[in-house]
Image 1 (cartoon, rainbow, N blue to C red):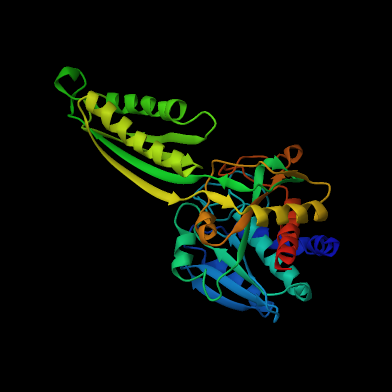
Image 2 (spheres, rainbow, N blue to C red):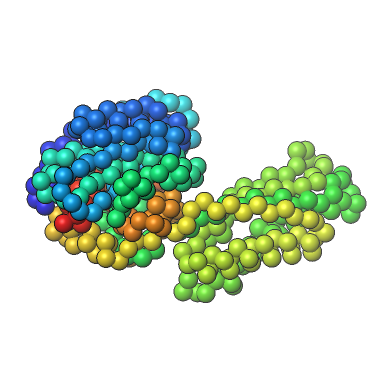
Length: 390
């Protein structure tokens, strides 16, 4: 394990250079053509078998050991976000309105570094490693597209690993938790329809704005009064649109937002109650509703045995790190779709450094991270793979 960490440190310039290049040239989901081309070239330079265009812009590569054994799938996401960068970094995005504000530039660089480490450490491995560089993780269905294109077949993986640089916690922290670690995600769109009219004569109209305001307030009671206190859920209305001019009551109002849950029973209960609340409150105000609910991803659930192995590897490889075995987040991840079929472990690597101002939240225009986390992430991913394939 010491050799793996040492090798990851020796490759830091390579990893950092890749990460900063990806950061300067971010690409949105299903538009990662430049990123995918670089990924493919780096993997081909290692003489790996490379497949491009999986899930539109995804890249898959195989490392064969020539010795019988299990297949490990290692997944890294590549897409950026539609955010105008405000970090002021020398490697800031050169693409207006697009930036890597969630660390996927680091994930891709880590994945290529892991490929180098495992290529050099192939004598320690049995079986094979399937490297998966995924497009469009940010709610656009990249994992589903790759699955549809057969990423979980030929050969079918026996186990899976993925990681996330985590600016919620400082460098030196690791989150490796068995069971549910990231939430299932639904989006909703609610159209509340009333009857428009003059703002000076509200009694002649059926006001959907008033109904919408009441619905937003009532939805907050779902978590506080319908979810068991020791369970977890989030219902967030994030947009509300209605009306065009100050003296006209509009005919309709649209609400959108997200629902997050861990437990399948809680999820079902929240979705049922959501519909009841929206329909009931709107009807009491004389309005009609149309509700659209879309499932984005199930919860990420870590396999206990694989997670225990990763924890053991981390304790040996990075003995000075804080290993948090209860790290969870209501954020969602479509790696969950792959892990529904392939048992695995999704772990977090602390990447914040408040002293250097590198502690902005994910999806923030000022997001940046302590690049030392790249070394820890690559070393742990590689070492965990070696141990699991033993």
